[in-house]
Length: 154
Image (cartoon, rainbow, N blue to C red):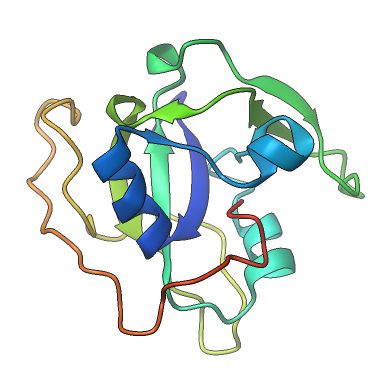
């Protein structure tokens, strides 16, 4: 995952993005960028914004495949530890997403820090997946997962 950035979103949002060819969280329209995280910090916004959600997937994004590099900025609100987060100022092409994994919370609803290797892939991406990566199984959205995402798909 070296050099990769992560974004969590509802499985249904990712499935729609795959059909469209690009992913754009609603924060792109409201804040001008898509919130992402480094692997070591993705659990922070996930727990703060999506505690207990079981319909999330984690997108692993190769910044080199983005139209413009992400901008590393303080969170909103800023993290007390000074953690910076990568913000993507434009839609994310699905070809920039090199892996998609289920992103379940722990039993208490919080998201623990990631450990290597990450959980098995949840959905196939495109043929642009990292060389040597195992093929991923397709994912169907769970029943009742349609609708607005009140967390803005971080």
